[in-house]
Image 1 (cartoon, rainbow, N blue to C red):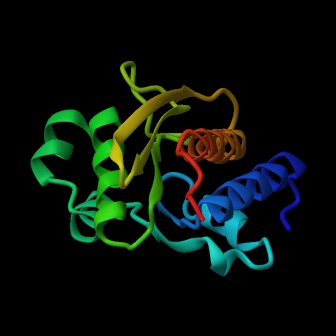
Image 2 (image 1 turned 135 degrees about the vertical axis):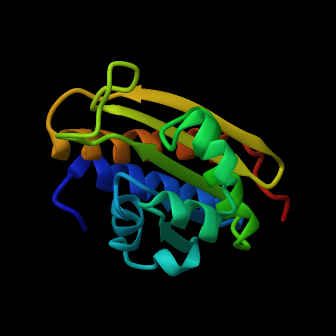
Length: 170
């Protein structure tokens, strides 16, 4: 698995929760560049519950692959609650997964502004049985620290969303 025991433990918990419900997940990642998908697929047997991951680093990719409206990005910015929710919803629409998690942010060292400094990350989860929910993360540190914290928080949010879903009746 990965070199991070916190991430590894979260992946195992996500896997167990998804398997218990007979469901799967997908990811839509920007600033983490596929790190959540990589963490998930580092666990043997992940094909049972991990459907797919898409890295949409550019705004064009967010629009082309996830259906995020160009106007939304123009008006709210790529790093916003609205775009994170649209990314999560788009990943859900483009896959058979039951749950998705999306991440868009500014990992640094450049790219920040007064309104959106380095470390500003929006995460969103979406589920087939409900809408998309966004959460703001203000992650301190350098690029690696921001990306690592974003992966941990994404897995935490996804786990909470999955665990809030009742187990399937058998």
